[in-house]
Image (cartoon, rainbow, N blue to C red):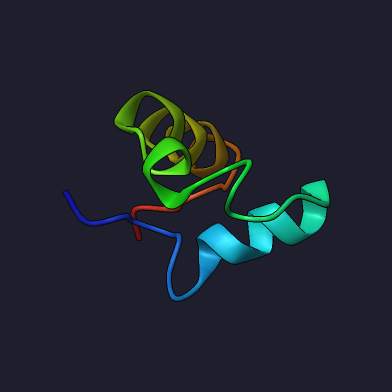
Length: 52
């Protein structure tokens, strides 16, 4: 499933904010649906009229 709000290079931006490299936090971990789907749903729920 394609991400609804996260686009190009978002995995590296997360690692940069956390101060780790891909050896400690690989894309496969960050991209787990239980993390990303919930995170996107939470963010979208905070944006008034997101669906429009």
